[in-house]
Image (cartoon, rainbow, N blue to C red):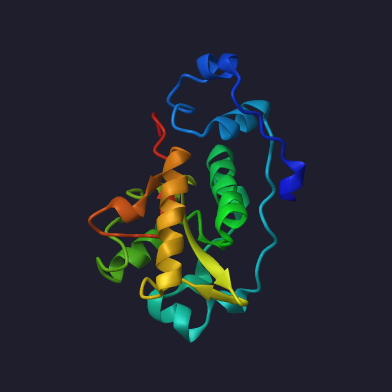
Length: 191
């Protein structure tokens, strides 16, 4: 959906008092209003699978070609937050973002855990990925996937991504001891 089609409502005192809950407290005012109005962003078109299977990508993210990038397997409220972050990354900073992995089956989670703690420290059902409440993201630049933390442009993007994701109530993996800069998750109570 083009950015011009999204209306933003700011500064309504009634909204501030209505939105006092764990769900909306940490969101920017315009985002809260959009979520309350039920505005719905559409995920971007899928990228060609070959983008996720290059040698460069394989060195950084083994077996990424087999990851699920299906937005409909993610929790809808979580995916809307993530899509708004993507939208703002593009509008404010010029970064095009892409979902590189969303939902993970328990089998895939165990496969990744079996590759070692440098890949993941979570086994099946220990990751928000199994519940559709986590996603790994990267950048598209000049038609290629940029994941490398050694790329200063990408690292600046990850920092901005982390700031925006946090504003939207998401937990960013860049704050962890085991840094996972492209990872965000939504820690909802009761899930």
